[in-house]
Image (cartoon, rainbow, N blue to C red; front, side, top):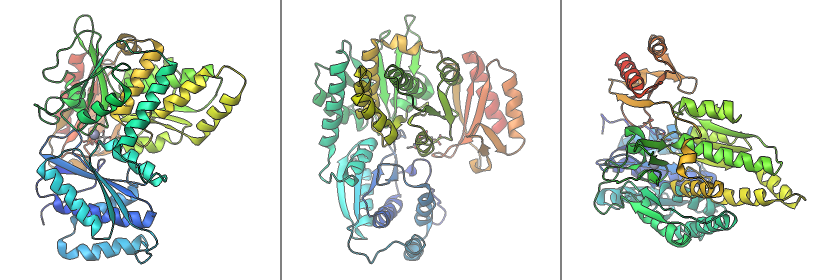
Length: 511
Ligand code: 16G
Ligand code: ZN
């Protein structure tokens, strides 16, 4: 449509599902072209992640299971926005500018597709992707329902030479890795309840839990989609932003609860303390748990490597203080969006990256693997090294994966003999609040310093600074959303009242 402009944002294209077929069709074409260029299979995921049921989205996955290269995001945007009359010309331009060897027939174009919802609109959108890819003669692998991280995993395995890889392979791999790690640590005693946001994660987590065995871990699936709506009053985003449990969940103090988002690439935990206060253990706390666990085991094995945690501006101020000042762990900060965190993580031997919203994973360098192998053949006690190797196997390194991260958290708590109480007490979060402001054009706001400062309009940052100064431990930033037509506001301070107040004041300044 003439009056509609879409753009490939932090999570691909996202919006109301109706009338979006042309975008999905063209992304099928673009995936085929990229496959030809890379001589490798490309993935296309059809999902609205944590957004409401009427939305949908599409994103491309590069050969090793990583996000689409940033240089191609603008090609995607250009292709999605031309009129039908201009489509062929635009495709030719991409083929020429990228030097895509279409006449070379020695490589068969290959596109893998997954989706997170099985409704009519989602099916017709994934059909549009298949049609677009087939228009360039692609061999399409339609995997049907998958979590987003499962498609990342499958693609990486496929391009690594395992062309028979399928969903079952994923379960076998992670179930056996988890069981192997639990042979080294102890057995489980208490269940973990997982809110699956009424999304695809419910069925997939059930399968994974079956492969592991109920005698090993007791996973109770909540919000399995039988009665509730996708992402409605539930799921990781709801719990994190609202700072409350999913609707209808009866919680008991110190039990473990977790939430996935709709495509199961985000994970957060929560519980109640003895006074029944709601306690959130978000991406920051998961990162702290992973990083300190890896660091402690490396130390015991006398291996000295560069470990870093990558955060965004959303990381709670007290998590950053704890990691730097008490744990002496190196921290880096990037803009929001997994691609930025992932890229930065690769600059460390071990990069633990998490957004506070629960999306994250760990990247291990080849150098790390070599050091583990070397350490193993060394003379000293190598139980730490085998733990580290087994831990590595339960991590999905391609992208944040709620199921794998859940197994990793559970294994670490077991190994440390920690309940959720010891875990949440490693530091206390500063009270915080997130808000959003509807503005005429969010793009007039430009940020710098990893989104921690506003550059334009120039009078906004001084106004924020002045407000922040009024609140003890105050911090606040604003950024244009990459997925919605709003400006997001974050504030933290010494009390919840002050954090709420600061968020409101800053929202008014934006408005
Ligand atoms: C997308 C991003 C997520 C980010 C969120 C921010 C990926 C795979 N997902 O969901 O990492 O936190 O966008 O949304 O990169 P916002 O820009 O609307 O705040
Ligand atoms: Zn998601």
